[in-house]
Amino acid sequence: MMIEITDRDFDEEVLNSDLPVFACFTARWCHTCYPTCLVSAELTEEYHGTVKFARMDIEESPEAAERYHITAVPTILIFQDSHLVKRLLSFHDSSYLKSILASLAAE
Image (cartoon, rainbow, N blue to C red; front, side):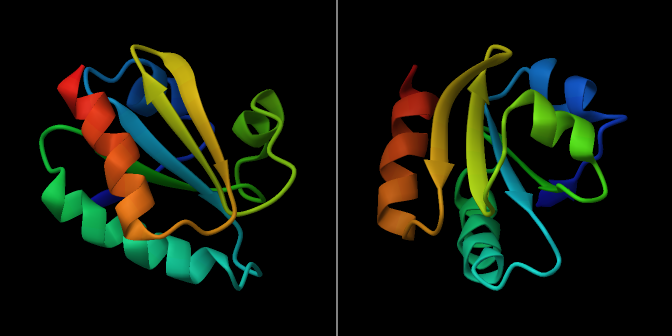
């Protein structure tokens, strides 16, 4: 399941997570965000218990977007042990995302 996060719970849900975190930054007006979120939602089932999936609207929670220099959406940030380890811009297909997540889960 993909959780919705805000600036208030970003640190707790992302930086303090025991699992790697796949954080998808989106906006309501973003048309390319929809397919990215669909692919992300499919991956949540496959990686349940090994990767946490979170979605954040940059307009509703601008602090985290500013902290990580999100200037375009969709942007996917992948965190592990409270560190940003990967930044992905725009849409990526599930096979590419799976290869990244598999390498995280193996570590």
